Amino acid sequence: MNHLAHALLADAGGAEFALGSAEGDFVHGHPDPAWPAARQAGLRFHRAIDQYTDRHAEVVAARNLFTPPLRRYAGIVLDIWFDHLLVRGWDRCNADEPLPRFAQRWLALLDARAADLPESLCAFTAWMHAHRLPEAYGDDATLDVVFHALAKRLSRPSPIGDALPALRERADALQRHFDAFFPDLVVRARGLRHDLSA
Image 1: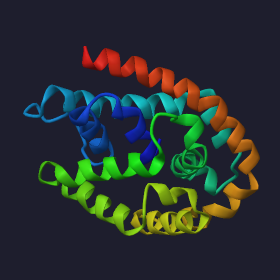
Image 2 (image 1 turned 120 degrees about the horizontal axis):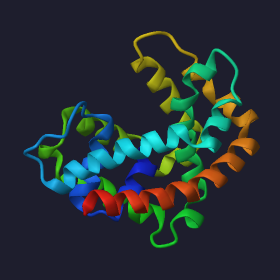
Image 3 (image 1 turned 180 degrees about the vertical axis):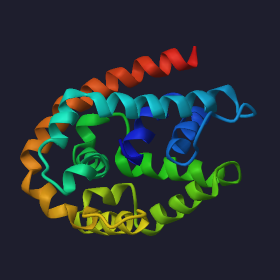
């Protein structure tokens, strides 16, 4: 899953837990033992969510909708597209808090704790501010910017920069897979938060 989904799923674990989850794509190896226990749990949560997502039958089926050469990168592309669908269906996925308020609160937490976070995450937070993310994941024009930026970050040439037309062509099928998958993910996340915070 991409940044917004991880933020939403980790939020109920509290600030330290959410910060640990936010670091999941920016910290490699084991959590720092000097971190608070909740932050260590949040990092493990992020990785467990990624593993669950990658193995879920609906996500596997969604990846298989793509043909080479994009299929090789379908997992990365779908992570971003699923955030797009999450934004578009936010009221169905999270009735407790409007997206603008959630996004403001989430970014404020990252800003307030910037001194404790990896430089790479701080740079990404600044990039989110500059591009009105995570709310703007709902805009096709912003998605195009995100895909091209991601393609430039990869060490080898990839078709990710041109992913948007392929996603639009498969939009109905991808929506069905997301709608079947995301409720399962929410249930799994609830169990993981409980187990990792015990």
